[in-house]
Image 1 (cartoon, rainbow, N blue to C red):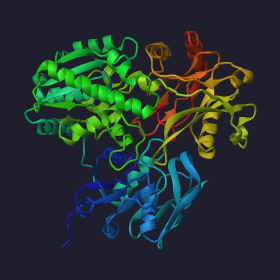
Image 2: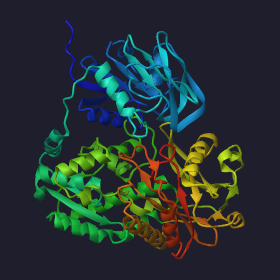
Image 3: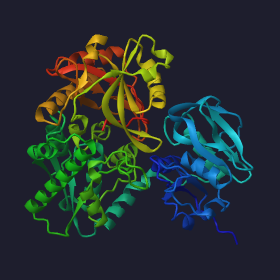
Image 4: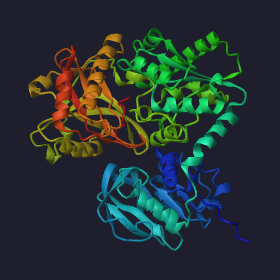
Length: 601
């Protein structure tokens, strides 16, 4: 007798950066999604309406590739492979996968040659989002090629009789124009799932999970005033009551201008009296003194938070074993830190070894760790939190410390001869800046040089050129253009100088950040910009440093596009920032994610 199917889609995690994002898109279809590792998937597959294989950082032919039981491919349940999952299906079912001649990171155009159920309603020449180095070069027997891109001959394939589909691009990211349509085609037309999942039931479910996880313990929360930690704190307070939850705002010295006072006012207005401020500026400056490596910087900051937690623990008399550490960790934090079989992109301060040890001991509560930023905002609204709080732009836990780039060497800049083939750059000088920034390329961490464009092209032209440079020029993952009016001769004198985090450098960065926030609000651009990092670089031209502007548009932090802001606004911001003592010039980041991360380190 055939087992009755349940109404859920099983997402099998191959370690991709976007695995949970796939599940989230399925939930947007109002269908339940469950995530499983390759080894755990067999027990759940028979009752699933469909199975989706996520992307992943490895090659299917690599020795360390994840093991997938053969029964997953023989179950008769409809299958969809995305990126690595697409290559996995091809490899397992008799096709061939090999390194592509040109890796694809970012936007590509899909040329559809076969309309079928999964691409139904998707127009030809639609924009899709790619992030891969390998590709399918031969489809398995019984499969047809559904679509191609300029650099990928098998961008989509299908065996409609067996209900097996593969796409090289990422339909789950917002930057794939008709990605949700493709997923809905699979969920409803192929898997015949029905809509039965609603966010309304989520808050009571989270309350119950919090009570179960915490038991009779108390919870100590470090709150930054940002969306994630505040929603997690509010959720836990509502679940346990204010007598069992304590929020602590730690002033690290790395906060934005006047941020401590703003956070205090917000919490006071909400009536949250289970809250205190801990001044620890000297502690945090001491732990990063002389440190230039970004990963080490994040580890030390995370460890400093633990030391403050232990200090507060002693002061408030929480006995050993009677407390838990609460964190507003969301899914992008965990996946970028190398969790869930993913490659390490950057270690978030809430995933340093000391935190990991507490997690293993069951002493950490993270009620939002399976969710994305916009889902956290929705939960906050369900809790009745004010819009000024839930709509707040994201800000990293380590604060301005990760936006203050450091260097242990003095290095000259040089003209980048590798870019001579990019025709759109006539009249533009391309400089290779020997300062490395963090990126994500093909689900792997990259730590590569910055490229700087000097010329008169418009922002969108620079953005298109950026896409080509990061694909074609090895050793780069980020491109910016020079906003300040400088001559080529002046830039010839530019160099990266030794620099570490100091109160003076943080003060300069804080002033530049405040100028950006002020002018964004003045021009009513808050809703157009999802996040606006302002970065201080030890790139010196006249003895000072450089400010990089990094406004982006996103909804979940897994992908992002540079914000196409009016050049008049960009120049106004630059002109005011240039009045800060110690600033030589301003540059504007035009790189999408991928290949660059939103933050520079």
